[in-house]
Length: 489
Image (cartoon, rainbow, N blue to C red; front, side, top):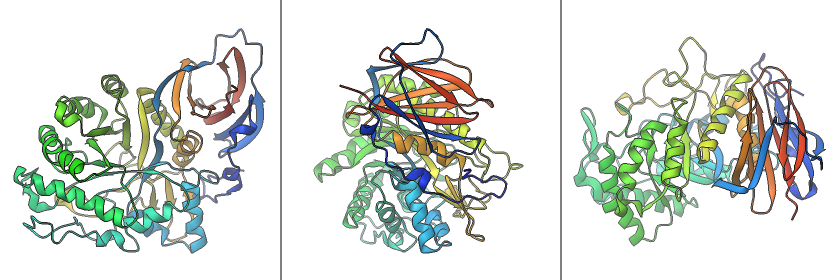
């Protein structure tokens, strides 16, 4: 059954295809298969296979070595923004719950396990005008600090709590801008005046405390979003971020017993991350406060830069925390957004593969839910949030027809989030085949998962070699196949 109807630009989610519980204990040396393909399968359960005791003499395929482990997986997901609830409001209550279940339930849906929220306004905080949590100039004591906007029905707090009714996930939160009065000049010099570093550190602390009061713990705080991008968001040099973390935010969090970990900042590309991260982590006093590295996947290149960061800082998890299709990144205005074509899933599947192969522990897409126009979005041009900002989400909700489309991206991302659960380790996978890629993972309990991507437009056969045995797999054209089994003691 084809769940992605590209002709009608709509989809009806049949939960039975995602509803079977993934019970690795039942597999033993039997390998469960789940397939998404251009032919119409959508995370469809296929007849189980078995490893053959006698290895094939073929040199083709992929060799899995679970005695060699690499990074631990923290999760997969997308971003929680006000645009999501606005689109969900166009559906009736049962349909809304179906969408939440499809995204967050690990048994009946994708089981998203790593999510991004934001510290006040950004371009898809669409429920009202631009805002921060304290827009009263010169409020050094933060008397007027308030997260009331986030508590409203279309706000982030109800949205996050609703999502957590279906599954658990870690949260990462970056900030586009502090209050304008902390900048030298919002119109001419959008850098933070160092005189406000102490109050900015308190601003972050107030945010974390207010969210905790409302039942939400932020696992990772990233002080700035894309500060290294010209003419985009807070224009604060990386050296000043280092000083802010080292002298203000880090010491304050330690003093106050804050459990939230600090990410250095969300660098706008892999190359910028490689150049900027060492500036901060090269200072031992700053490094001791940093719990993770984060970067964005725009540019769709330079994966070797993340591999270099992983080698340089093997003790710190690296998160890819934002990427998308938009007219400002990779999509010409002659092509419509959002996208309904199935092949787009293969594009994102290859992005996920490349980031994980480079050492990323989490992979988070930008907009999770948008409407049929790729919106709604916030307008505030002085803050870099301009017009014609249509983008591509994981799920499209047509606010006129109330039709819901789970995109190709949704299914390819779900193959990872559903089956490669937090705590698993990527293991050594060697081999090469034209248009075919393989990544394998092992969980502490012995669950094994191999994700096999076929980007070719025709079916192919491949093999997985593991512990002296071989598994022969037929891969449909333009498909991703999850192989799941349990490692015997």
